[in-house]
Length: 460
Image 1: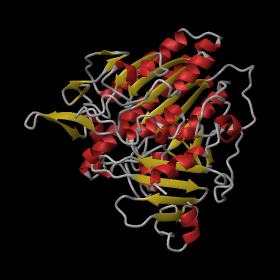
Image 2: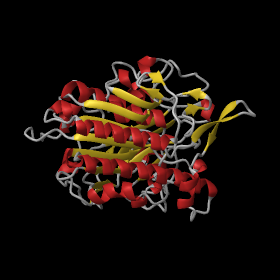
Image 3: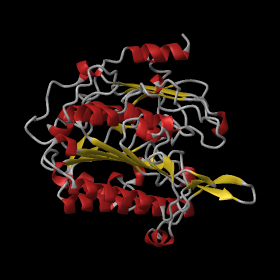
Image 4: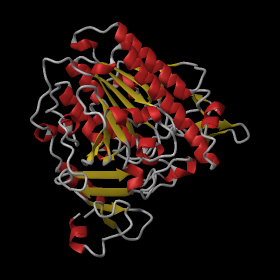
């Protein structure tokens, strides 16, 4: 059977959200929560210290200490654009009209007519239009460029500050030498350091919301913070007259991680600690403005790291742009004072597509008319339904599907993976035969059980 047909047969079996959402409802007498969703770029599971990294991230770690740490959480893709599509639409990227299964390319401008389409509803649109939230995006978009119809302000966000390409020069806010820093729909010139600009704009937004807060639902906000760090920067090579990938740490941050011997890893770590500073400033601002008590803060990353630019996914196999665990098994932390038990951990099988239905549940938005591929995980987040980390009780019945598209410009092939409970089927374009792993017994994917499990292999 052709691969594409298999994909759509699988997606056709997805249970729509109104039947998969748990039959629990938010307390309608309590104020609706503010939501801050921090989404970092090319940061692997071994790039956050509470997950075992040598890079110090005390502010990100604070979210784990004061909230819930996920140990079995997956990105929607191992590549930037489809990962963002899955998170924001709650749909598998294979459903996207423009088949957003690989990174949209800014230069050469081959993808200027592709991106998020009007009928592809975002969680921001639901929060704004069905629950009265103010919605803002500050940071990286990467779901369409070249035409204002693709910008975030046409996809559920009231305001947008940031860039549309996959990366940017951290000091000039350009893609090479092409302007790519927006305030809503207009290009603007900015000076500074991109990570710090994103943090500063986020702090200003939070303070403005605190100053204008009222007891009405309309006073609530959804702030989406997709940092471009610690992704490499997109500089410019005058000699080649072409953009160039380059790590762009600040000198002061390099000194803070001078204990790391490898040069590229040290540069990457310096960009991580700057990002962590921003997270700390945002948490401090929530505290100082009195917003923290009723704000759900979520931290997650878009996919695994790229070791060529200093990222690490150890101990997992594989990296960014692959569908081994290293490419898609990512950090996720949540904090909501008074709602989430501090210092808690869950091994429940969860992924980025669960965020849309879960946030919709928290704000009481009816999304039964939408086809969503995740499920409401509010019982896990709020009720302590964490499960025995050594059991499969939270794995049973879940099917997670990934596909990455071919991309000749980046020398990438088509990957496919399917997880059913503890089992994972994987097609690697660089391998002659498929893989089959039991992740409960073999989380590092060291033993290919395809030859040992022919019936299960055929079924999956």
